[in-house]
Amino acid sequence: MTERQIELSRRSFVVASVGAALALGVAPYAHAARGRSVFGRYGSPSARLSEQTLYVDAGGSGDFTTVQAAVTAASGSGYTLVVAPGVYRETVAVSVARTQMTWIGASGDARDVVVVYDNAAGTPKPGGGTYGTTGSATTLVQADGFTARDITFANDWLRADHPGISGTQAVAIKVQGDRSAFVRCRFLGHQDTLYADSMALGTFARQYFRDCYAEGDVDFVFGRATAVFERCHFHTLTRTDLTGAPYGFVFAPSTAGANPRGYLVTRGRITSEAPDAYYKLARPWVPSSDTTARPMLTVRETRLGAGIDAVAPYATMSSGFPWQDQRFAEYRNTGPGAVVSVPANRPQLTDEQAESATREVHLGDWTPWERC
Image (cartoon, rainbow, N blue to C red; front, side, top):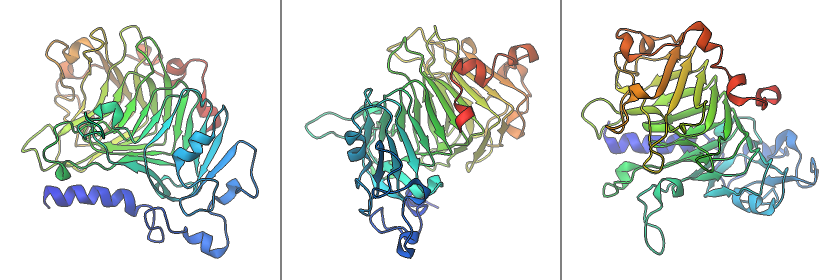
């Protein structure tokens, strides 16, 4: 298969998952034709669950046909958006003022509700310049207390379509708010898919991802948030534009040096469609804007597939900041990618240290799993 065929297959995967009865978010979903609401058990504009529940349907059965229009209308705190099955090709921004917002995919299956766009860091902007990494995000969440359930966030920008663009970072979602939770969501992209970050260097935003799926190739889960990934599935993609390993890196945390908690991955799994050992588990990102960062990643009780390089699972991103000086550790991982053949390359927590590497310690007084 050529690179072009592989790349197009990824784009087709994003769209085809919505089902044959849906044509790019404009055709009614199948059950609507049988007289059932596209919003399922979550009411409708004529049977609203609450005054602060808004309904989105690209086919016209809701209050709004785009997600951004609904977000704009939700001008206060505590709104819920119920999103009908469809592909919503748009960019969406949730400002800091729209706190305690919840998005719900109405079908209960994230594959049915897709928010997707195709900007990259190097994409030219109208009026000049390029979008940059943050500007490439399909969805940007800056408000505290955001929750999403059963929704796919995607960026289907393809390298093969733009051989002249070197800024290939293409973010599906950037999350900066504190107490942001994602349950049964999917994050699809290639480079820099899921940007789990914070609003400022001194702000330690807490984020929780449960039963989610994320895929990509280069640094596709990255940023400085205090983030817990529980029972999540990470999948590394194949590439034909490179002739050898590594194809990429799953995690690239940029945890602030003053933050005692970075990324925690627990009870998850990592799979790959690339050759064995063609991916690194992580590399530390020390941004030029924060050279005091000490990236932190703990991966525990997680199955690492053969796609992860077991001999040397970590790499250094910048020569002045070797991965050995950062806060990387593992605990009781399994699978071929977790085999410890060179102990110096795989820092392990002791049982005592592992007692502090938990969701409770990372997230403190915020307990989102109690309402998942």
